[in-house]
Amino acid sequence: MAELDSDTWVSEVKRIRGKKLPLTSASVQGLREEYTRAIAPARALATETLKLERTLSDLVNQAYGLTPAEIDMMWKTAPPRMPIPPSPFGLVTDDWPKHNS
Image (cartoon, rainbow, N blue to C red; front, top):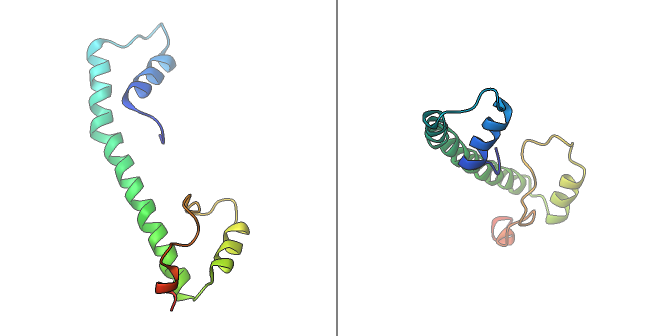
């Protein structure tokens, strides 16, 4: 669902159904409406959830007084199924010293 837009979703449904079960125009419209109603808002919520989880993770690291090197080591040795991935922008925010004092 990460990169799935409305057109791709409809195309995948068509592909899975095959030529024996084609979609009608009304069905395609219904799929697009369902995408707008359910998938797009779920994606927005997932993005907000990840942002909040990263913020919480940063706050916990600060509460324990972890240094950037310790945080880096923690992520390098993390189990493969961590609840959140490391931030693509780096492990420690630019304002780390202000929060860690």
